[in-house]
Structure formats: C-alpha cells, structure tokens
Length: 473
Image (cartoon, rainbow, N blue to C red; front, side, top):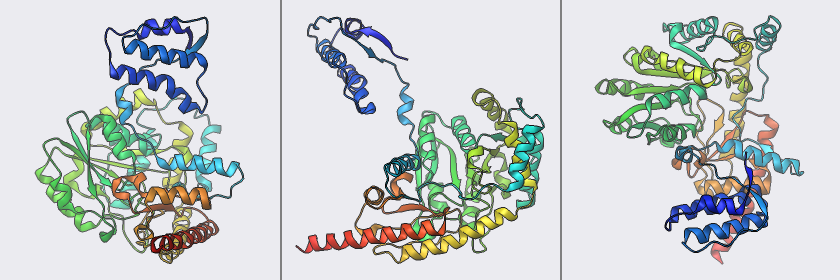
C-alpha cells in the first residue's frame, strides 16, 4: 500500500550521484505509468514530482517542493515477472463482457470451458463431503482414496500399473505444470515445447529461467509433430520436452508412429524429462484412440503426466488436477505443494473420486454433443471465403487457416469482436506459428455456433470485397 509523502521526500530518495538513463526511465514508468494503467491523469503533485525527478537524474538542481502531497508508489518488482506472460482467452473474455454490459450482442467462442454442468453424481458427492464434515486440511499430495482412484482409472484406460504414491493432486493441472517446470528449468537450461500451443508452456518455461525452444506443429500433418525434428533440438542444456495430445489450440492428436520414434530416440538422451499434458484425453472423435505416454515403459522413470477433471467432467471451477511423477521427483512435488497451497480442498477431492468411479455416460454424452457441433462448425468454416479448416481429432476447438482472407490473426480477432460481436482468439495467442489461424471453441450451443458463423461470413464478404475493390482502384 502506498503512503502519503511530500515531493521533497521523493526527491531525497531519488537523488543520484550521476546521470542514469535506466533510472530516469524507471522514474517515468513508475509515475507516468500510474495514469496509463488507471485511465486517469496524474495529479499536479505527480507531474511536479516527475519534473523534479527528471532534473535530479540529469544532474540539475531540483525545484523546491511546496506543501502539496500525493501518493507515490516506488515498489521494486523482481525482474523475472517481466518473463511471465498471460492467457489471451481471459483478456478477450473480459473485453467481450464489457461490450455485452454496454449493450452489444456478443457470441462467445473464445473460452475453453464446457457448457454442460458436471455429472449429477459428482455434484452430490461434493455436497455430501461437506455435510459429512470434510472441512479440514488433508495430505499435501491428496487424499489416498483419490490417488488410488486415479491409479485404478489409469489402469483401466491404459493397462498400466501406477503406484498411488507417485501421484499428487493439485488445484488444477496447471499447478502441476508450474511445479514441473520450476523443478526442471533454471537459467542456462532449455525446455522444448510445441508451437502453436497452450501459452502457459512458453510463459512458465521463461519464468523458470530456462530458454523456451519451440518445435512446430504442422497443419499438413493434422497438427502432429516430426519426432526427428524434436530430437534434433535436444542439446546438452535440454531438461525436458513438452507434449500435448489432444492439443490446445489445434485439437490435433499426436501420431502413434511419431511417438514411437520419439520414445526410441530419447534412449540416447536419458537425462531429458518428458512432460505429457493429457488433459483432453477423454475428448476424442472418429474412433481415434488416445495413446498415453504412460504406455512407454522406457520413459516411465522420467515421465511427468498431467491430467485433471476440468474439461472431461466439466469441472473447470472446481480446480482439480493431478500429476504422475517419476519416483525421484515426488518429494519435490510435495514440497512445492506444501509451500504453495497446502492441500486441495476436501469436498472437491471426494467429488473427483465420484467422477472417476461413477458412471461415465454423462461424459460420453458430452463428447457426442461436441462431436456433432464439431461437424457443424467445420462445415461452416470451410464455406467461408478465404478459410480452410482441418477436422479436429480431439478436444473442442476449431483452428481454421484464415491466411486466404488477407487479414492477420490479431486484426481479424479484434475486428470480429468490435464490429460483429464475435469473441474468438488469434492464433498468435498460442505462439508465433499461430499466425494465419484463429481458434474457436465449440464447447457452446449449436445456436451460438451458427450465429457466429453467420456474423463471420457477413464480415468477410463485406470486407474482402471492399479490399479487392480498393486494390483494383
């Protein structure tokens, strides 16, 4: 919290023995930046203080301060915060909500959140846990009965044996991802990740101090990857490789043959960890099978598997995820949990047990509905001028190529929101290789999808024609 100080006190703190451009820039940012962030002009006291700080940094005598007082915040922020990014989905959602509050009609396809409620028996289990008195702390790795349920679920789905002691439960799988990258990344190291991909990968890698090294996901291969290309990016500095299947934002599923080649190639690099983000593993279409990296015994002692309940069980707000760790990393994961969040709340954990052990018909019904909506949105996108779109194999995103429209990804995102009220995401929100693409979530109603397609088509027809006319003229 800022404290009220006189300008004279500010000047005494700001005096420098010689001119420092960096110090001057910091002064400008700290005082002038207040107005930029708040949307308000700085008070007269701020302006005078800014003038005097400039004079001090230039070595000139500062003007004497009068009696006016203002609040000056001079907090020092760790430099690593500059390396931490954010997620555009939440920024666009906020803009869309602001426009909607002002009376604009908004069709929201920007957020990756299921539009169905969680299964009824899951909600009941959470309520019952509260009534039964599960209000206290639990073990930092998660209650044993939930970790046993996770182990049994993985065994049923992938025919693997996982020791519950290798599992930690976290408030969302994002926390487990953060823990993994903080364990492995540091200044001087490298971590390999996909591009385009969930933006947290690059952001959290950079925050750890490691250098993010991207490998491309290609539209030509259904947004799978080339194992030889990934392996070629390994250096003595490499600590880990991140894989995501089914993937956000592309909805691609990694090719089994490429996974086999990657696993074989990694035998030459025994010190490189593999982080497999499988949060969409239950949302898959057209007979495609999700092949978990847990199936590779050769990788088990260096594999970190991430999964959770948010997408498949429509439990985004419950914040429940988990990781399966190599034995050597479990104690570090638990230590991070104790220092970070202590434990996941009990009621949510009991709901998680019910989700895994209870009937799966609700999940199957949701996936079937998303499959129908997928067909509608892809057909509609393919009918748009200048647009082509691969068929999603999993997850619930369409990732069409819009390079034929003549718009950049960011420009099309902004104009569709402001002019047509369609909220979607630029492909560049997911990395530099997302240029030429946009992401639309079809985890929404058919009516919303059809309305969005109508508005996008109207925009493209009007604006692409006007561009052609201008070019001819």
